[in-house]
Length: 308
Picture 1 (spheres, helix red, strand yellow):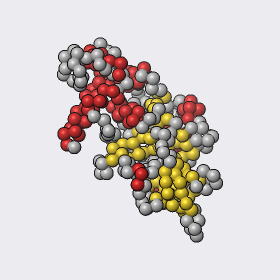
Picture 2: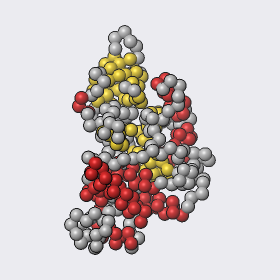
Picture 3: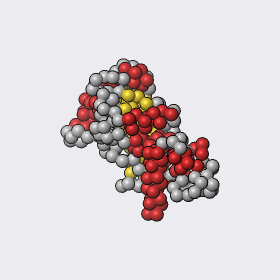
Picture 4: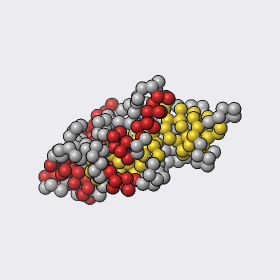
């Protein structure tokens, strides 16, 4: 039988049957799916799986296989030295940020853009807490993202500003919400889906001995129509994976038109003379802070290459 994974933690998964709509508590047969060793966690919220009911144990089943994913959002897990999927099979990923409390972190967005592209995901940006003071530098950076054809939504989970437009956008879709701790993701979810906090808390009480935790993703059904929001855990850092430092420029969509225009083949766009990317930064075509993100990521990748 086929099912949809609503959440998973500690090798226990809640799976909703595609045919009967019943929810079952499942485990992976043999604990690992051999064909998916690439990932630290072979099953994630949003996966479609094969399962077999356990005779004599109602509402329990064994997962025997997993369908191929058409996209995923993943981060690198240092402990397992492998990809850790946060959510899969989404119509769109929404990266949630705030203007000042906590501070606006555009470099987190820059990394999320790369990881979304790696996972074949469409991505949008949600500026939550738009009722707070918004510095001109924040507005400028968001306008720059929009110039790269990345949709930006300004909302306030507290006042409700912009929420109706966002509801219309996600209606009937499976979408993912990702962001750093403190950006108001939980408050926004509760504004969009009134029972969202209750759903997450129930899983926490059942699986985490009563402690409220956000270290797992949960699929929460829309109350206003078909579809789900996948609430991913608060992310402290996004580590790049699977990218060579020499190829990093190809992952910056605003760099792409200028790649190959530098004086030197294999230009890293750091200190080389006649660099078309640096010239574009100086002329204001490429955002200076965005270029600084590239410089930091390049250094990180170089360090990783030296270590491994």
